[in-house]
Image (cartoon, rainbow, N blue to C red; front, side, top):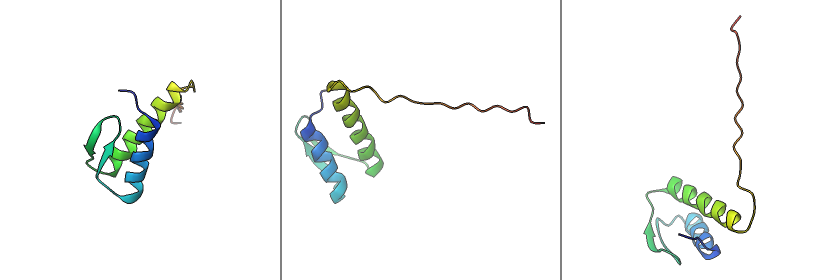
Length: 70
């Protein structure tokens, strides 16, 4: 499902006001289980909008540290 800027604005408003239920323009009424879920969905929307706008996807950096233990 393609997200819109209106979806992002609506979820930001819901997070700011502490509402667990909101109405997203592209998917109708949504009830979230908690703030963590709302923050996760917001991140997904932001990433999808950035990808649609031609921005590069965020990359993950993994740093591996090894030691002999001496």
